[in-house]
Image (tube, rainbow, N blue to C red; front, side, top):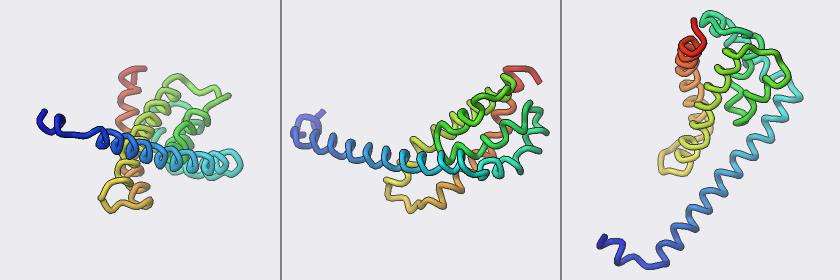
Length: 155
């Protein structure tokens, strides 16, 4: 309370300006990456190639429609909405769709919160480090999300 009483309106204005500048940096980072990677996903086979090594693992975990959901596993790195849009117009089973939404939600939380905060902090983190952290989290989340799908939809 003592600190708040001695604060001036300039401190609040400076805080708001800093928050606005941070928001602009985050938005520009996310939007620029999204445009680039949506173009890659729609006009190249890169996303499909990324799904090839994941398909056998998803198959072992008992997920349905592996050939449809495998490309979406790592596509969350490219654009936040890409995993779900890859399933648009496909007849994917509810369990497979739930897996993709669950996994991509966890990936969105990582990128919108953790990654941007790490980039803005004093921690020496670059884009390569973020990619490695994203891959590690995704590898950890795949069996966890499959387990949750098994609980919800039955094994």
